[in-house]
Figure (cartoon, rainbow, N blue to C red):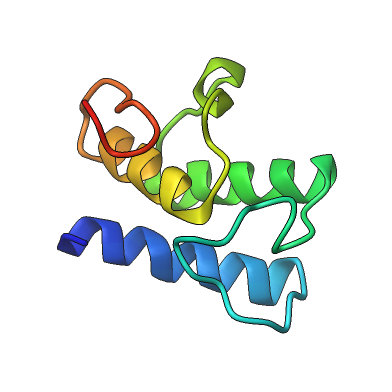
Length: 92
């Protein structure tokens, strides 16, 4: 992971633990819904917090293909860098 991706991962971990009260580990391979047990409200809180922190906009189309923490890290890092959306899974 590059530095900006590490910053995004740290912020995701903070949001999930503090705002969403998740007590477990948060790793890039974890599935947002299956492993972290995020429902639609939790996903919305996570998205809004990331938008506010990184001053970006995420659309419904952005969520297509975003299943894991790592997918979300890549998306947010790409947006924060001012680049178009990267394809989930790391390809561009």
